[in-house]
Image 1 (cartoon, rainbow, N blue to C red):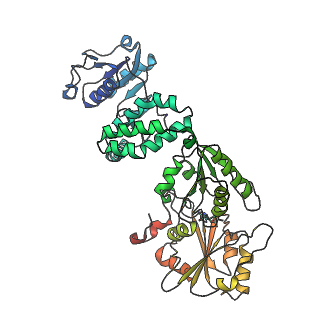
Image 2: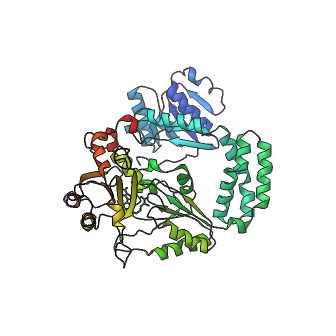
Image 3: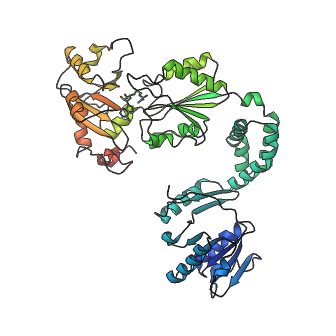
Length: 483
Ligand code: SAH
């Protein structure tokens, strides 16, 4: 973060603005709107000041500002358009330790002016750290168009009920849940439809019915977070991630996804490294039950899809046995993500009429018992999850059971992430290739002639771009681009 975003209290305080043009007027107007007294220093004021000059809190000074003018200022703005005059103002402010903003001159600024979406009392400030004010304005335009103007009034309504709800529900997380329910349900629906009176009635009703025991009921969200690219999250996943009181996550989750979880949520790492069982599954299930019983909204984030080799079923069983409500949100499995981002379709009319998903990881204590006869069949694709650790032995067995050693094979490591790598070869060569390329996972192994399609779909071998978020699929013809 280049700067710390803050909201500055200006009520009753004085702000100085140097300049008589549009940028100065914009700053003066914002300061007045925030309740400040404004002194504008300029030989004359342009048309943009016309709406401000009659404001009782506005004073026009035709002279240049002096050191004495800086005394007691909350903030100072220089926006004269003349570098030397702006610098003089900045020097005066700095001498008096008054935070200064100089228009279009980030190196002279103590603070920068964000792009603002004003739905008073709801205010959104956007900054690009000075990198691109135009980008900030673009984002603002998007937000302006998606946040209804009525949101400001809705926030004010919530504010007016704050005290009463505080008396009714003592617990902070219960209050939060009450509002989420109200604001995602009928109260907001009516309000935003312009039926504000009905919304108030609805809110009163909800307030009367606000019941500690019902709101104290915890629940668990078992959410598939996809293979890594945050763009592959579902809307529902994101919504629940923003609502959780506590999140349990494991090793496969990249930080880009975790950053989208509600910031105040407690983060609990329950990662399981193969052969280093950090937290046994039973313990995770027990923890989910315990947290939900405390009334928390527990987010269990899983890489890919929760029911695809994710042991989601086992967790649900434990929760169901304890009578805890669960929502399961499907995710893009790494099989689908790797397939799309590596340019290897899992089925294809000319290559594979079936696709088999298998795990290459044995249950602890037991050996791996795969139905090899089914796996070595022609005209199908085999996707192996967790197969890296025993790849050589798996490939030997594949051939020993009648599989073709020359069958094309691929490994997709860190699929859909900025550091995605794809290594191709055959059943015979792939384990050696993985070792010599230093593949450490997470990685999927794909066996089948569909692997050869990659050469056509990703003609340059799909080198991973240096730019985060841009994957080798930049080489896939536009009609196939998965984003
Ligand atoms: N539920 C997950 C799979 C969990 S098993 C899903 O639907 O994808 C963990 C295995 O998934 C890893 O060992 C690896 O084989 C695979 N995997 C998960 N994320 C991956 C990624 N980004 N790239 C390649 N393989 C991945």
